[in-house]
Amino acid sequence: MWYGLLADVLVAVHLAYVSFVLFGFLAVVVGMCCRWQWVRNRWFRCIHVAMIGFVAFESIIDMECPLTTWENQLREAAGQPITGETFIGRMLNDLLFCNWPGWVFNVVYVSFALLVLSTFVFAPVRWRRPRPVAVPNEPAEKAPVTEAPKGEGSAIAERA
Image (cartoon, rainbow, N blue to C red):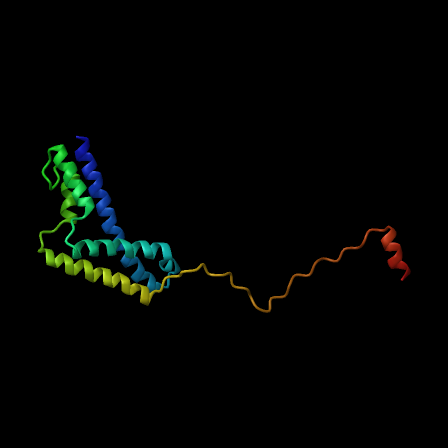
């Protein structure tokens, strides 16, 4: 039973991975149009391009995704068919996996990776933190004038 549940969790993680890649790209494109500065964040963009780059690399070398491999192993250990026996497992598998020829996936993954990479040209990454902008010609605040306390120093000032 636990193996099947773990397999379903792994499929949900796989779906989250795919969602981050797809919706991350959509967010970058919309952010370019709306001039959102957060889409230029170096960590977000580098992680995003690395994730799709890994998928494209897997596709080019004809490697099965490790998440798919682990899910299949867990389903086998649970005595379930590879497509997922539970409702959640079946639903998520149907969302993730299509029965298209392998070359179609290669073209889609590599093309999408190149598309994501092109966003680095159209919405460049902000590699350094922006420096605070100083306002030119702003008058400096004057320190309040205080009277010196009466004492030895003040007597000298009074004589002069």
